[in-house]
Amino acid sequence: MRATSNEAHISGAERIVNYDQLAGMFTDLICRAIDSYELPDKIYITTDTIDADLITCARALDIKTIAPPSCKDARCVSQEIIRESGVPAKAIKRAFDLLDSGPTPEGKNMRGAIIMDAFTGERLEPDEIRGIRVSRVDYTEDTRMSLRERLKANGIYHERVMDALAIATKVSGREEAVAELCWSDNPDYTTGYVASKKQGYVRITNLKEKRSVRGGRIFFVKAAGLDLDGYINYLERQPVIINRAGNIN
Ligand code: AMP
Image (tube, rainbow, N blue to C red):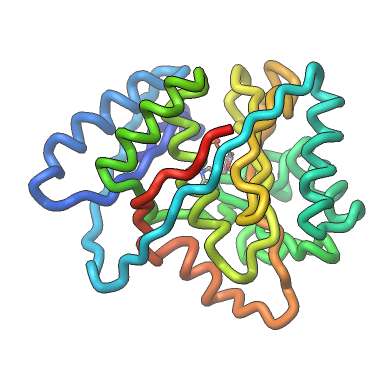
């Protein structure tokens, strides 16, 4: 599902379901769209058939929350975590500068993510306006319910956390993946995250200033020997179902 207002992206969500769940899922997705922070004027729902033989399963990344008192502190903490993944300071600076200034050539937010050479900071995605859209990832119903309950018990439940965790879990599941950085373009949502297989999904409050409309995602990758088309195909086309929850710290 993709909802827009005046052509600007408002909300999006994606599910992998069996045919008999389709009708109910449409209703859920429309409710989700109209519950967005702004009422959309267009809601698109697209369905596609997936070859069940292509599905792979994954365990959700462990979740941790860090609550720095200010945006400046949050930036330091997040940069340190990315550095620990092996990304040098120069590439980290480029990443933050891009998300702060608007990563498209016109200085706007992208629809998808930047793929960045973790060593040089060079952008590798073929389209700097659209970026790469991670797609075809979802939870089994049991895992979704159990994660939801555990996030609620920890006071950090929000559907956007569920969605972002699904994306981060898929993104981290490749040999090329070094780390991911994300914060939302929603001006009221300032918690972002850094994620990697090793460090898990680390939520960081205050990662951007309140009321900022800037946001985006960066996938830092090992570029040496990278099969870019194969990597993009994995992110956009390979179905991944998350069938085990991780730990919440
Ligand atoms: P959100 O957390 O949904 O506000 O998204 C933050 C930013 O991440 C957006 O501005 C997009 O640039 C990017 N993004 C959103 N959804 C996806 C996705 N499915 N795959 C890759 N990047 C995305």
